Image (cartoon, rainbow, N blue to C red; front, side, top):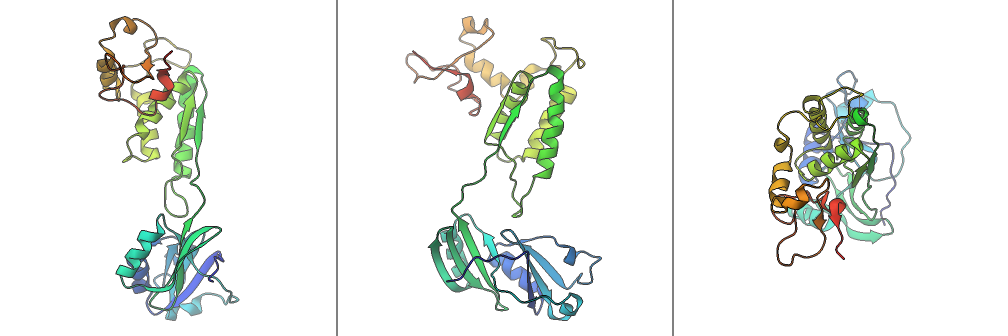
Length: 287
């Protein structure tokens, strides 16, 4: 049985690092990564390619470039990279005539399979049993001080925009807040429904609201702090149209969304545009 031993770097000597990298990126979906060894200032510049693996880096080095790196003690291990669906990945690898060293197998960590490259390198594709990490954001109140929260969100989105697989790992599964924090949280939740946008783009959209749409200074906290056309905010016009027939409820400070199935008429927010992330928050259970 092939083990999952991992090393900080896997160094493999190949005839041509460009053609070897093309094989692994095209047929196995591996991603070109970064390494100090492959930087322009390195002695191996032009002789090596770095590929991002699961928790490590694979270095493909031309035979004529191996004299430019120090000798290292040989070890045992196989480069590993993570895939979402091993079954479909394996079927695609077989379709591309990739040599299968070990077909898909199960162990305590998940599923895996081993393949051999044109230079004899054995690599492992892994489908982990571990659940994806989840993140939550809690935003405090404080009036205009809520703008400070944007700086924190910016830094988090920038610092955690990609993990070792090149994937965005900052998108939260829960967002909540108090007072102005609830305003920021509501914006984030509604914007997260647009899967085409990254968390960085969403945060920058909220920054734009604070810069261009919110009036007043730090110590002002009036009811008319939003500048411009309120109906131009995402979902506001649709929400008002959905609830317009409840004229009496519109006079109240709060608008309730029924949590019960519709009876004689559809409950407010059940038709047209609605923010799925906010509906459970504003729903009022029926008696």
